[in-house]
Length: 342
Image 1: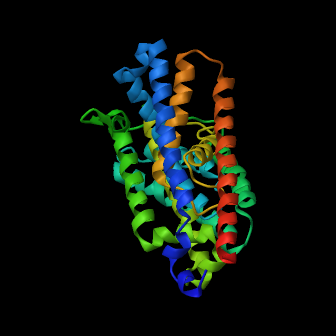
Image 2: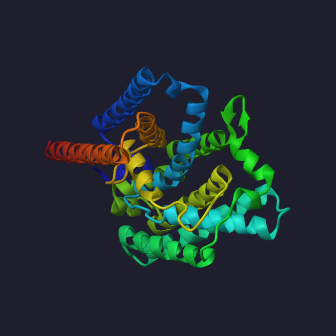
Image 3: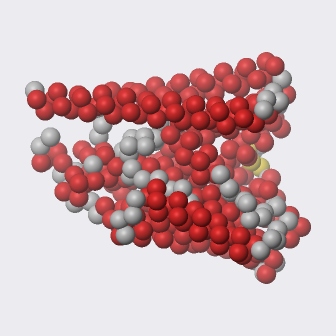
């Protein structure tokens, strides 16, 4: 690779055609699997494709899909954010507490509070990883427990119920526009917006460049430290927003809110084609991955299968996705070596 080709983020973010074709094939294959699960379950239980069932499925997947957006940006940089579940829980409870203290608080203010709180918590992760040079896995595993501990300390055995929240706030999550739940529409807007940003804007493409080769990204003039900091702050902000929507969706929140969510989010992103090796993936694939895992979970519940099978299938899909990433990475490295020799 010449120095001139290294000089732009576009060149750094570029991948061999083989990789892009495999990613497209994975997205198509995920849609096929999704249809098979939907139609197969409906053949056994026709009510599975009922309007009410599909609505509940979309609402259940919406929160995970939203958090997947921030997680995807972090994974693209070859990092991981394990603290998102704790951020969702803390944001949900503190937002509910704010409604109790100020019953007349405008809804947009609650959203801004969740975004701000999440961004601040995400910035802590960013400081540890970008400036402290702490591995993201270690840093966010630590903050996962710290943020969860803070939540338990704040909750102190208490609970927020739907009766403590404004009806207008709760009706937002249950309301719909043209038959599509408001919550789902909001998540779609966020996903489309960030999808366009990652694909069409320099700042978005820099996430791919950093994950592909951070040293080359520095040579290309990318501020890797600032980009890493921004990525974790955005991941936290989106998780904070998800916490507000979690509160609106379920109404009841305690100290365990959001527990285990981080693993579901990472699984959805990786199954959807976001590489754990960084630099490869799309929000479209990650969103389909979240929908697929959510559909499988609902299908198993409908078929009255033990909960173990849901976890086993998620684990199997995650292992399969990681295996594909490893094979693709090795083939890509081999092709680059052959080109350099030629």
